[in-house]
Amino acid sequence: MTSLQGGLNPPPAGIEASTGQRMRSIRLVLLGVGVLMLAWGAFVMFDSVRLTRIPGVALWIAAAIVLHDAILAPIVFAFGIALGRVGRRATGTIIAIVQGGIVVGSLVSLVAVPLIVAKNFAPANPTVLPLNYGLNLGIFWLVLAAVTVGLSVWAFLRRRRPDVAFPDDSGR
Image 1 (spheres, one colour):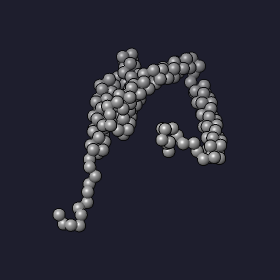
Image 2 (cartoon, rainbow, N blue to C red; image 1 turned 60 degrees about the horizontal axis):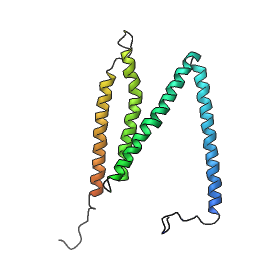
Image 3 (cartoon, rainbow, N blue to C red; image 1 turned 120 degrees about the horizontal axis):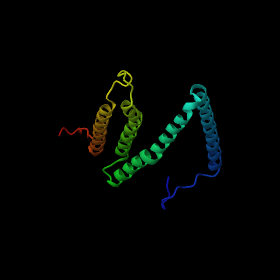
Image 4 (cartoon, rainbow, N blue to C red; image 1 turned 120 degrees about the vertical axis):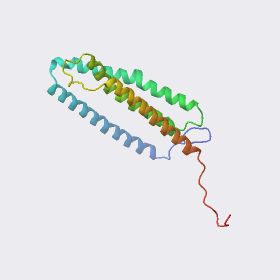
């Protein structure tokens, strides 16, 4: 619903007020649920984590926020911009597939990198960290890249495929 000038048409009279009030109510409910979840998480953390370990937990949370906001989000955003500039060949579906692949790979890396680092400082017991996490992460990224490229090619070819025409009744 856009006007000829490219802007959005205003909603009919009376709808804006009810939509605004409903949206405000939904936001307040979501805010309340979020605050309750944060309070529950803080309670569980202080109840189950020794006080001497809380600075380490806080550092991990801060590092996760920095990793997301300073590294992961800009990379996903840059790939979205780059794919958008490719032209009409990169559809929204392809952009979403690539961004999804980056997000999945980054999240798996977020779990695997501490294991890779810990393996260097592992105790003499080989059963504590038994796997080669670096190799497994590399294999995972290769498989993820292949799946992402395959899905992107499939989406590209599916978009280019002409509609299948049914034969007409003329018998030709």
